[in-house]
Image (cartoon, rainbow, N blue to C red; front, side, top):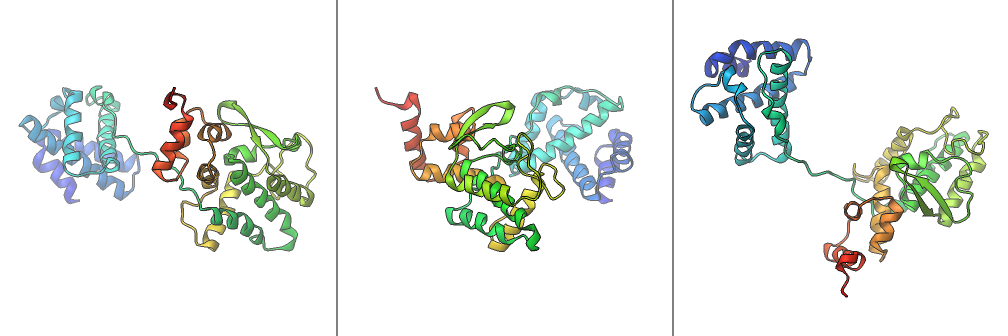
Amino acid sequence: MAQETKLEDNLYPALRPVLKRWQDYLVSEKRVSPHTHDAYLRDVGYFLNFLRGHIGVSPTKQTLEKLRPADFRSYLASRRHDGLSPASMARAFSAVKSFFKYLRKTGELKNDAIDAVSSPKLKKRLPRPIGEDAAKRTITEVGTMAAPTTNDWVALRDIAVLTLLYGCGLRVAEALSLNVGDLDKGDIMTVRGKRDKERLVPLLPAVVEAVDNYVRACPRNLKRGEALFVGVRGKRLNARNVQLAMQKIRVALGLPASATPHALRHSFATHLLTAGGDLRTIQELLGHADLSTTQHYTDVDTAYLMDVYNNAHPSAKKK
C-alpha cells in the first residue's frame, strides 16, 4: 500500500524495521480489518510526521523513548488545530497508544510518558426521550406485534415490561429482575438498582393492571419469589427480547433509532419534570446518587430546567 511505502521507505528510515514488524503484527496477530490497518498507519504516520517538525529531525527509537507527556499533549493540540473532532482525536491517539503498547510488549522500547496523557473526553450520549404520544402509542402498539393468537400472553408481557419502564422509570435490568410478589405491596414497590441500592417507587394503576393482565394470561406456573417476566421457554426474560420488541415498534411507528427501551426511562423523567415534577423527587424515583445525573435525563427548556433546579437545590434557596 502507498501509505506503507511512505511510512517505511521515505520519511522515517531509522524506524523502518520497527514499522514493518508492527504492520506484520497488525495483520498476522491482531488480524485487524483492512480499514483499521489503514487507519492505524495513517494516524501513526501523522504522529511521526508531527515529531519531525516538533523536534526538527526524523524520529528514531531513541527519540520515541525520550518523549515526555508534554510532547504527546503538543501532538493532540496540533490535531485539534487541524480541526479534528474530539472523537477523531481520541481515535487517532488510540492508534498511537496501540503502537507504543506494541513497542513495549516486544521490548523494542519503553515509554511510560504516554500513559500520563488522557485521550480527549467524549460527551456521553444518552438516549433521547420519546414524546408523550409516542410513548403511549409504543406501549399500546406492542400488543399487536405478537402474530399467533397462542402468543397473546407474550404481547401482554411486553406491554407490562414497557409500562414499567415508562410508568415507573425503571431500568430494563431492574424490570426484568422483578420476581412474582414484588408488586403485591399495594401502591408502592421496592426496586433494587445499581450497587444493590434499594428505592421505593409508586405503582400507577395502569402499571398494576398491565402486570396483572400478563400474569393471568401467562401459561407458565409463575411461583412466588421466582422470575416475574419469562420467555417462551420459561426462563427469566432476557433484555434482548425487550430490545427486539421495541425495534419492531420503532419501525412500525416510524420512530427514530434513539427510541430504545431505555429511552422510555428518560421519557418518564422528562415528562414528569415538564408537568411540574420536583427534580429532587425525580432523582429519588430514578435512583440517581447525584442530581446532576438526573439533569441529563431531561429534555426540557433550559430556562425552565434551571428554574426548577434553583427551587430544588438547597444552596440555591434564598434565606
